[in-house]
Image (cartoon, rainbow, N blue to C red):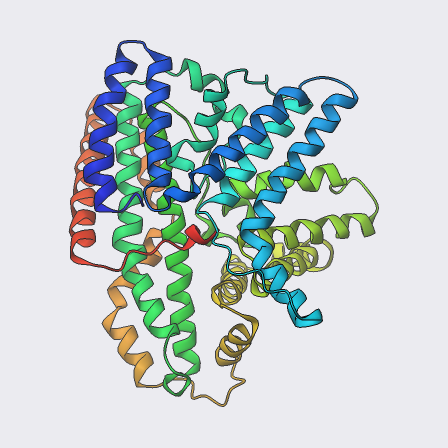
Length: 472
């Protein structure tokens, strides 16, 4: 089940919200939490009911491990170690066993373990569970004695299968003490509608373009067509993932939860360092706090600092998928980040802003070419096409057709990558009067309703509705 699907919008939500708010309004928090937990498990089990045991096993592992990890001394350390091993074991088995067996088979032969199907969202809920366990051990949060509350935290449907990665301390008080109100509900509805528009109107439309171009036979390619295709994918993955994050944050707000932001206009970055402060922020901060800093961060020798950077980025690549292209993608960004930090970062800052933006845009697009590729040979072929290494013409009729036919989609996607919303908000704040405030909320409401209705039209009329981050 996806947020942009008919079954979610017109069956799941209409069933959940009235029942939930009846109990929430009456002050029955335990009952409303139980309803939310049941619906969250139904949401997860809708397409893959046989994998419900995986998320329940994750809940059990983290509940028991954290319970004992809260104790000081050797017993607490042992519980922490066992909990992390079991969490990683679950993740490695379902996500990486096939990849490991395949590569061992290439070296030694005879490692056929059959196909292991990966449960949706396992990387997200595993990282959430581990953050809870580690924070309990470090004393940053109180251990939760009620297993149903741990289950609600890990399985909460808005952020269950695609983030943002919500830490327990972000919503610790809200699990039992949140207060739903009309202001939050209105903000949540608007945020959800905008996210739905990003996904259904922009990501799906431009994603179809990317799929059609990048799926073409080599004989149809030109250098410029390869760039058009991967630029379309660059827009698709941003609006796909940030749209889903917006919907998750909006749904959380409706239900009284305040999830952390996950994107902050990453394509306006002037360096790759800045890009990773703006893209998938909940994952970047997770690796910073639970891997990079415990390894020593930058408070160590240069060699160890370099080691820490490469470890984090190899793990970031592996987190996204069990394939060599993801490992290469992580290493690619590790090298760039090291270069920015130790070689040319200060020089880059002195260049004209337009040059900084172009530098970042090109490197980001090349990164998405590696990320998109199903294997290294495809990545090599695509990059050769992009950089004049395959004896292709610079431009051909396919390029011209796609640019002319889909110019509106590209222009809209480009504009929506910019912080236009911030400019509008700043304008209304500068002209802060009762009239301007009322006008702002009226315009926002009309805009959200329009985007929602238009999104429904796109969803109903199109069968193309993939979601990239379901793979992770």
